[in-house]
Image 1 (spheres, helix red, strand yellow):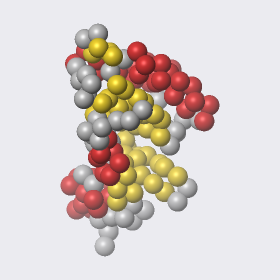
Image 2 (spheres, rainbow, N blue to C red):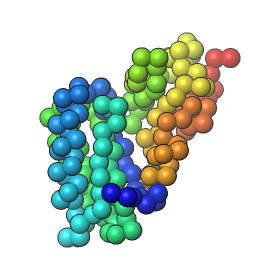
Image 3 (tube, rainbow, N blue to C red):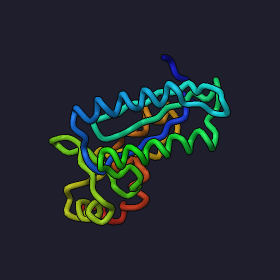
Image 4 (cartoon, rainbow, N blue to C red):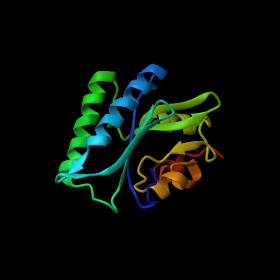
Length: 161
């Protein structure tokens, strides 16, 4: 299915990595949801994916029908159900994800600050900008060096030289 680069994106980040089995089951649940996701009785052109066993992404091409408050509420309700089922937190916006040599890690804000102060995370560390709102931004501004992300506004003064 082709999606416009202006398609709307929502990213939910798990506070822990899911197993391959959990990810497979979760993907099926997301597929079932997007196949029946509607806004005011209009089928949404939607898709969902799980990236890196940690990020849940919902995508709606609003050129066909736009997501509404009620349809967005349905997706949030689903995410709350998934949190319960998988014992994860998907709504902690200050659980910050970043790449390491061995994969992807995440840390609460205070710990993230400490990792910067100690030099473990620097301006070249790849971080995940889960605030992106379009497919185009997902493809170009989601995985970026800390130096090029909104994280710099928050943590830039702590960088080790």
